[in-house]
Image 1 (cartoon, one colour):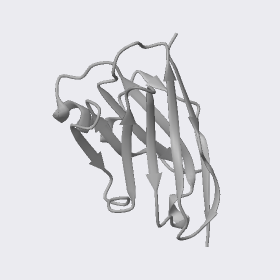
Image 2 (cartoon, helix red, strand yellow):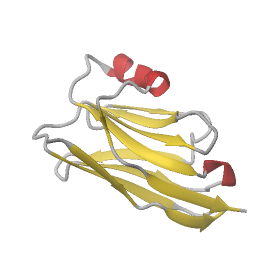
Image 3 (tube, helix red, strand yellow):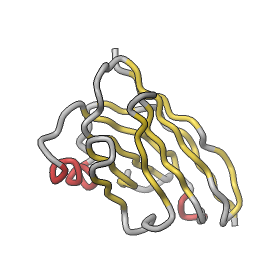
Image 4 (cartoon, rainbow, N blue to C red):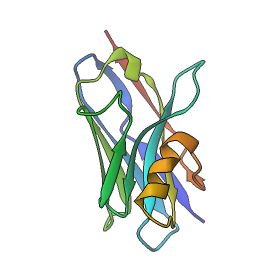
Length: 130
C-alpha cells in the first residue's frame, strides 16, 4: 500500500525558512513525477513545485520562484521542499503528491495546474506570521 507522509511544517516569522519532507513507502521504484501543493482556508488548492524524474526538470509557481527549492532523494524515497524568505501569504496546508509514471516532463509540468496525481499525503501546516 502506497503511503505519503509529510513533515516539517510549523510556525515561523516572515523571512524565515522551513524544510518540508514527504516520506513515501509502498512503491519500490523512483517516482516519475512528484510535487507539492498547498491550500489556504477559503482558497483553491494550488500547485507550488513539481519535479520530474528525480530532478531532470523542475517546475515552480511564479509566487515561489527564487524562494522555494524542490528536490527528491531516490535512495530515501523522500521528497523535499526547501522554503526560504517565507511570507504570510505562504500560510497554508502543504500536501505532497506523486505519480509512478508520466510520459515526459511536459506531462509532469501540466500537473501543476490540473493537480491530477494518483497518490497524496495528508498534509502539513505551514503558518507564517508578519
